[in-house]
Image (cartoon, rainbow, N blue to C red; front, side, top):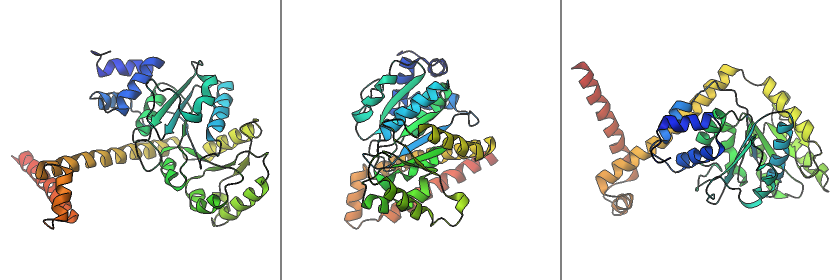
Length: 326
């Protein structure tokens, strides 16, 4: 594939060549020079692809729940994509990591594609290229795409902006974790899933969650609370029905397209803005470390460097306007 062009990789994705799909995802994740061109050709804001985010604290059974949802959607004839964001680096080819080996039963199913991605220190719990991986799987006709996050509590709020439906998974025995996640319940949970419902303490957990949800003034805005056991399969049908109801009552196709386009554009602005700022600082000071040394030596401040960056962009824009007038 060394001599392949961007169009070749676009065809690979659209033809759902799974081995080639893994290669394209690796290219995007590693910043290959062709990655931007591939994503440009694949992007379609109106493509119908339900994105389901699955988040919650460690030990909540997210991987087992993901496995159950894969089985449910496959029984209904859907091709299912899974992006499993992992705190460690993935093996090549999208191999499963950690407790995600429980999804191995779907490994030989051509209608399922599972990709583990390293978060690479990204604070929101999602890899910086998760958004791009979602676009690629959608272009390969996977629908829905499930995004399972690492499970680090409050930092997972970012998933709400990426997923159409976010499942917040809680289990009995979390103790103070439920208290610390109250804000998260209100911010990110379209559906609250009380997993391991066969365990003692499920009633207390449900009472605690409902008490938190009562802080939301509008009862209609409160997310449904679904009991289930991902281990036994109990409640999975009810959960799938709740997902369908949220989708049916949600925003229209145009609104979804607008939201997804804004998400991608704002994300790219942040990424490219960081790259540009880093390049300009290195050009001026030699390295980021030397810029920090200059600040510590009292020669400048972070705010002064910010002014220099803003001035560069302003001058560049004025020069471009002058060229247009000429």
